[in-house]
Length: 127
Image (cartoon, rainbow, N blue to C red; front, side):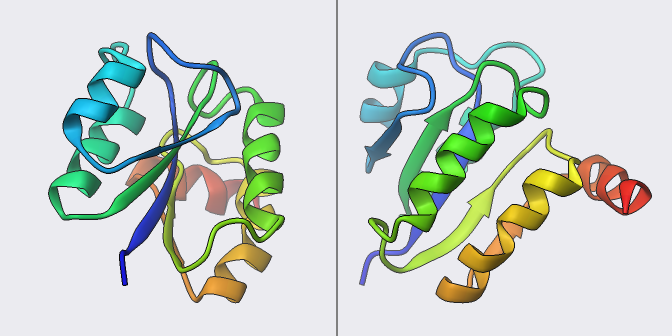
């Protein structure tokens, strides 16, 4: 069974809010190009592929800032089209609204949320 991880991040190419499935670094590079400065989504995607995970990547306009971008991707994940989701990676997101909306997905798949220390701190302060 192939392990899957959903990631949200910025990139120089690709449609916004569209779920892209990538299995190789070449697919990732051809689809999204280079990561913008101070962006972590594609960096986490590279690591996931190196650990033999299937990546479902949602391109957002700016990591952590435009809530609608995240909520569109979260709605896609809630629809049940993705099976066996092991993790959701949301670098740059400290918003309780976004993180809390991931709860039903994580419970359904017994998956985890991957974020940064700074984002976890922002989330805990907001709560």
